[in-house]
Amino acid sequence: MSTFKQKFNKKHGQPLNTSNSISKIARLSKISLKSAKKIVDKGKGAFFSDRDSLRPQVKDPTHWGISRLYASVSRGSKSSKVDAKELKEGRKQFKENKKNKK
Image (cartoon, rainbow, N blue to C red; front, side):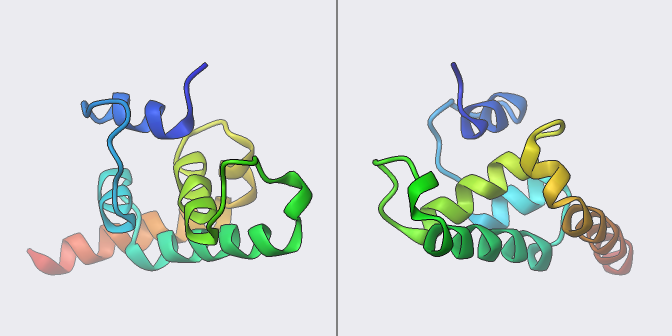
């Protein structure tokens, strides 16, 4: 069974266990950094609000937030549906930012 992080890395041609920054995940997923941070913040909130749902190895809210971001940028995942608004807005902002840099 592979994790969302491993699926992300495979899709982008990286070694499976490579860790990526929030900005790199956003850039490779073609969403704005602002939207990526919103998703991470939602994951951090979930870390504190529903401790029973956490895996034992998760000890840090940022780790949980980045895990949520990996899941959200994976099409078809539950998180991608829950975070659809942030992803849609993030793709729109990413395109606008790219357009303005030209």
